[in-house]
Image: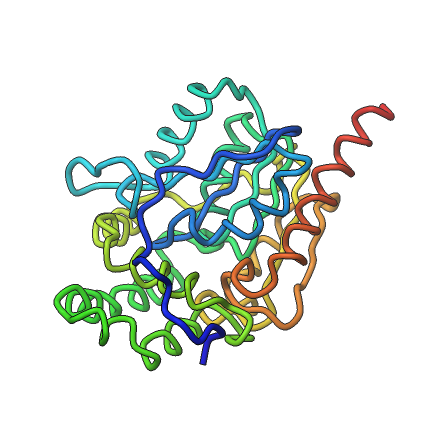
Length: 284
């Protein structure tokens, strides 16, 4: 069972964006069908030395409305760029998990990233490919359960059995993932309007092609017990094609969304990358 013996006093509420702290500008990007809630503990830890901005993606819970039936990584990055312009950030440090890592690479390609920490990033497949189809079918298989979940009483939709199943998908040490965080993940998935549009557009969106020539300092964090996009299959292109200067780190004992179970470690790994890069720039 996930930790926490009492139900939160109120159901989770949507977050348009977390914006907190002061210092180095740091953009945090969540994964597919997730929301800024997954970054709350990391944002709190980073806010003492970074100005943290963690927006909800278009079509995701709390994010801008989705128009039409097509949504891809480029469109997600377009909206995030608009938000960066609104808050006055020409460039920033970026940390992204899963889909957020993929969008982070796109923003880096556009010159918006000072550094990029990619945590279990998606997009490390060719288009089309069996790997791409495999991950698409994995998410597609969740759609019937999400539709049923929307119609169930909260006592069932957020029951211990459901929370445990979701926690096992996202984390290795389910006891370390708070009940509130898992309930937010369930709610995010049930209220994600981008699920089918992104799965359909993913078949057409070109694969990442700029990895070898990326000039942004990159730290790749691979999650040892990733059950969503396992490293042995989905990290291969990142391992092979990123520049030699990129950090490649296996984070032991965590699942696909490690911020839920190991926020201290993830905050430290992001902060190390941010400040190592800043120190290097000053030294030059």
